[in-house]
Amino acid sequence: MWLLKTEPGDYSWDELEKAGRARWDGVRNPAALRNLAAMKAGDRVLVYHTGGEKAVVGIAEVVRSAYPDPKYPEGKLVVVDLEARAPLARPVTLAEIKALAEFRDSPLVRQGRLSVVPITAAQWGAVEARGRK
Image (cartoon, rainbow, N blue to C red; front, side, top):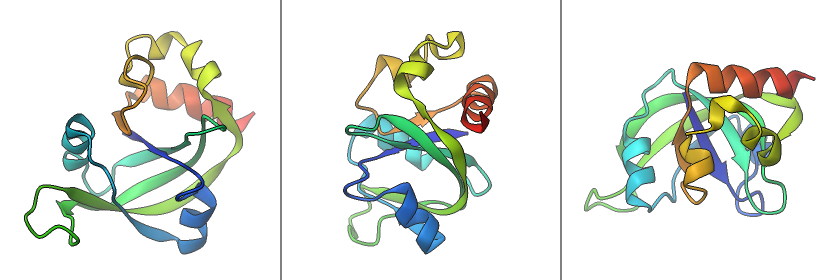
C-alpha cells in the first residue's frame, strides 16, 4: 500500500478519475524512485493533494508494475500505471493524519517532501475510516 502525492494544479485526482487510467511519472527524488520501483500491480494507493490542500482525496490501484519511463531511454527513472478506484467521501487532511498515532513514525510525517510513501495496513485503515465520515 502506498501514498502518492501530486500537486493538483499539475495533475489532480479529478483528472485521474476522468481519465480512468494514467501513467504516474515525474518522480525524481532517489528515495521516492526506490519506492515507486517497488510498486506492483494490485497495490492500493492513496492519492494525496499537496499545495494548499494537503489532504488524501482518493483511492487508486497500480495496474502496471514499475517500468522504465519511456521519456528517458537511459532507464534511470521509472513509472507505474494507475487506475482511479474511488474518491474519498471527504478529504483527510495532513493535520488529521499527523494527529494519528499510526503515523507517528511514517515518512509522510518525517519526510514531508517525499512524494511516494509506503503505507501500513493500520495507516490505510485509519485514513480510509476518516475519509468515509
